[in-house]
Length: 278
Ligand code: HPA
Image (cartoon, rainbow, N blue to C red; front, side):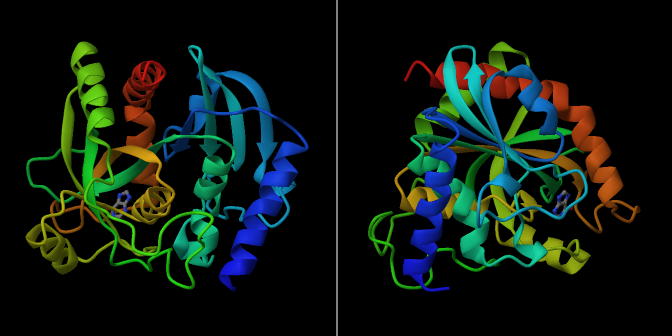
């Protein structure tokens, strides 16, 4: 798809949403596996199923019910993505990042990314939460390839500080206050949908990765292009392939994410409340 068509589709989606709600979010939150019911904790102002937005990519993964939820965490206006689309579902990379771009066009200045991952760092344990300090996105296609969309950002955006230092500090403070143990490290996005081989996991460790997953980094690239302030937390649901004797299953990942959900949710809530003050 040409970049003109990509931008046209994006603005069409915005027009479509604006026919339902004029809500202006400050924080955009992408709810990863396990955080799906986070929306139950927010004061809802409007909900829009992705399938009601013309041209919007709709997820095919079981357990990834798709809708935007507009509302308030405490008194902070947020838009939550309940369900995201993944590159491995067969969407173009521009469709994968369309929702992120859309939330920015709707007014969100801050992007809070969450996901489920496999732990690559040998000191991690299943169920750990990891503050994302940086990422490796270059195993997935770059969402900015093609003629630059000048309306969104510059051709060669700087990626030195993708994950905002001040937001990271706020999350660390919130975790400490709530006695939540928080790992931190580098998240690598691979395309999936197969899990990694043990050799790939060793490669990732050598490259400096602490956790691996199938989302998030390309979303952060698109958001950084648009000048959003970004932060992310990954729920390390399992140790990556070859680190334990067990084979990996989606069910195991889902169960671990569900188990970590209460703590994860309270960390997100406490952090977002604090984001409202900056
Ligand atoms: N690898 C990639 N993605 C994942 C994993 C994993 O081990 N666990 C949860 N998402």
